[in-house]
Length: 145
Image (cartoon, rainbow, N blue to C red):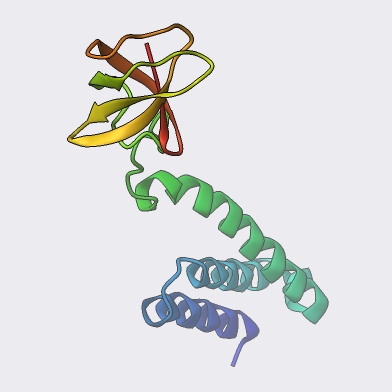
């Protein structure tokens, strides 16, 4: 059997293996095999040397892998959710809360948020009963203004 046909068959087999072993990688090695088969068929110098064929296969496979993955990244990557500004705030930032224990900097006070008491700090004194907004959350302490 002619060497070019062997490379073409090997390339097709590798491409078909992509259906059995998913990951969208093996197909590029199959393309490398097809390119090598065409090179062996068209360029006599490549067909006469196993080293040239191996080098052709390696270069073609890596190039198709790099270029192909880059081209198909958007198509196959799926949609990514927009990153949250602060993933740790649990939606607390911006909430209106009622001060249940006066805040006297540098001491923390208490606020009520969704029926639960939270430790709260501020850069200015805030009296009990005032309604303030949460501007940040640090673990179990809310920063309010």
